[in-house]
Image (cartoon, rainbow, N blue to C red):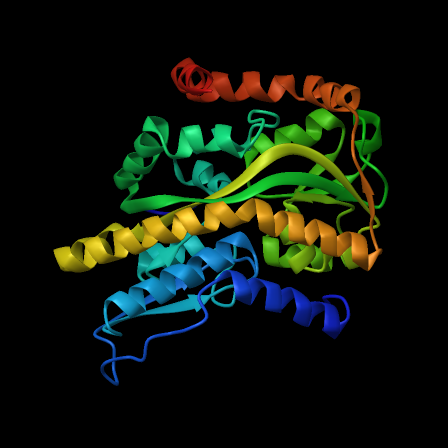
Length: 339
């Protein structure tokens, strides 16, 4: 198997305080000086995002319910591994758990996960959860076993918005822009269909690339845009609500099989509860971030009209057809039937 400043300190303290109020604030003291099992959980986004908060909830639940016997070490913000190497790190046992974006699974042999990258596929979070919490989601997670992975659930980070140093309200506005994308054929095709040039960059590299003019714009949920300080280097954010960003929580299959049955049950239940928690707060976190952006005043915020969104949607219809040809009609029919 192979896998191919923040604004002013006062504003930051207020943001962190609001986040802290939304998550667990106490930890149970460990019953023994040394945990019997340590789980390293790595991801690339900030602690204050929905994913970061969900991992913190998982960490607290596991350590509480195991009386400190199981320790979860949380490494956010690409502290250990970035977009390009985290999958290999999991394969090699350098970490035990990841929550990669769904876009990353296509390039390691799961093109059906690219469904989530399709622009204008979902209207709202309820539609997304019909997929992730239903039969299609269970089928997608089960399929990961063919490459030695175990899927434990889906984290929700909400819908993506477009940013650049000008409004992006029509396909003509994208012409000539270099837009940062994840390593996703679907997202790259989306940008080309809109008239932009896609540039594949790791998430942790994006803000610097925007600041230095390596790329002109990108797409992100507002919580990522805010916590990464992109509002300091992007003058315009357009609330296109065009695509969904979610993550799959995965563990190495060999590691999972090595655990006692009771520990697997404890971890699975804690992840189930942490996922519910993270998904419940994702919309609120994006709303808080948008409010903070408006207060910061560094970025102009634009809301497309219905006609403008329809024009953008028409421009990317070819992306849906191309994916259907690549993965077959069965998956597309299943998605449409579920929606």
